[in-house]
Length: 140
Image 1: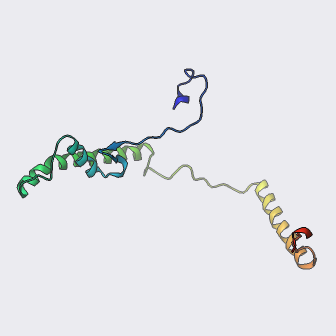
Image 2 (image 1 turned 90 degrees about the vertical axis):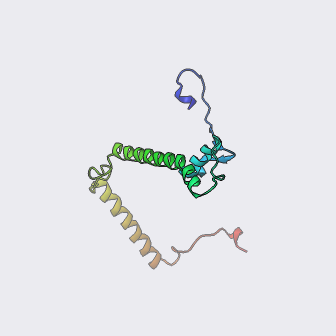
Image 3 (image 1 turned 60 degrees about the vertical axis):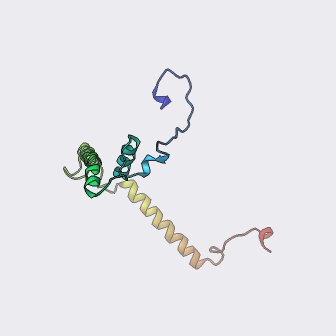
């Protein structure tokens, strides 16, 4: 991030910037949208546990339901925008191209197959060729 401020800092050092966001002592990234909304409502003084009956509990859920629904719609719109910006579903992907074999590809393929055949024939017909050489001082 500091390297982006070009010219203000004469030397930049490679490093890592870390941190985490906590909501009532728990990491926010580990919470679902409903849990995050519930924790935010609790931080503002909202108490769901003291409902006082089924009808009262349902009335107390209204701010939670509205905020979770709005949050889900906003996340869905963000996903739609991201998919539109990447042209998802508009046609075939553009980064996949058929690469034809050129002269150097054929030459490398023939060289590799030829080397394999020569080494295999030497291993079959020359008795000492296929043995692994180990220095005598390594042998027990």
